[in-house]
Each structure stands twice: as structure tokens, then as C-alpha cells.
Image (cartoon, rainbow, N blue to C red; front, side, top):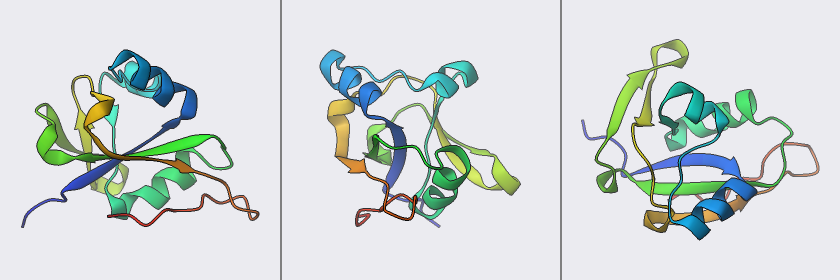
Length: 115
């Protein structure tokens, strides 16, 4: 069975803007501590937000084509699910899309249409 074409990275707007200016996204503090950039599939994204970004505003959602990443590994994490981890830097210009991920009035993130 083939994997997804797109994976997703949630990051603070300031990190994304800095990466776009420099041309290199090294990751959020947790990524730097773990030695790889954490991504989620579309199916994993809501739980990732709920567990790691609950109530946080000013977030961006980057959609990245799996085919653009050379150092991507699928590794077990929550409950044995395989999560995409990038062992390298990301060129933010390779993002298929970069969109805001606002909080709704209920305090939950408002999801854009995922493609």
C-alpha cells in the first residue's frame, strides 16, 4: 500500500516566517531536541494538535510533498503508529502550501481543506 503524497508540519508563525526568510527550516525546539523534524499525516493531524498544540494560536500548517524529502523515515510513535520524521533540513519553498491554522471560538483549531 502506498503512503500519502502529503505530510503536515505545524509550527509557530514566527518560525515559519524566519525559515521563509532564510530558506531553511531546522525545526521547532522539540524537533531540534529530538534530532529530526516531526510531521503528521492528515489522519494524525487532529490528534497532534490536540496533544501538542491545544489552545495555541498563531500557528501555521505546512503541507509537504513526501517525494520532495530525501531523509524521511517512518517511525513508530503514539500507540505504535508510524509517523514521518525528517532527518535533515526542510527548504520552506518546497512546501505545497503554507496556511494559517487559527483557533475557533470553541478554542479548537479550524482546519483548512486538506489536499
